[in-house]
Image 1: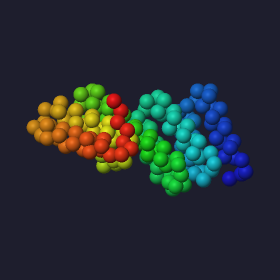
Image 2: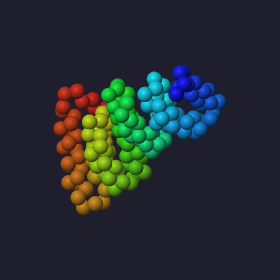
Image 3: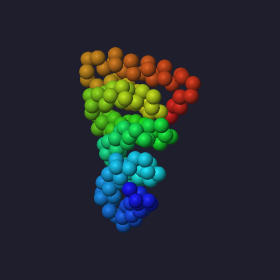
Image 4: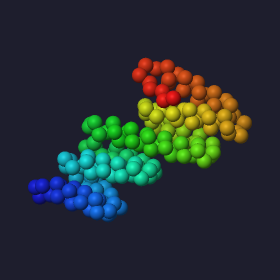
Length: 168
């Protein structure tokens, strides 16, 4: 890897990005992060990918990128790993929220249960519990009220913990 080649690769891709070649840049930067995770430009490259998919509200891709970057060993002991977790959990929440908005209550419950397994430490936990409780109440399933009670009980428990931020 020639000296300053990583700078050239990153900056040339940023120039292409500004010119509108977004899809190609995302592909190039993903390869760059995979090949050169120790580069000082790896985290900025990953951030540009995430920021782009967040801005375009591509929650599946955002989740895919965030979870992929979470697996990069060089990122694990950094502050960036906390951002990756937050982005992954927020993207998963958005996918669950979309299901709820479409009145796909069974899908909402399935997604919420998966969220609870993966992201129980997320700042979005109370939001997901609220969606799940409401979806369970609206669901025609015979155990809907029981499940709603379980989600809302956990919501109350989580909301009462110190430092939990409940959005109105």
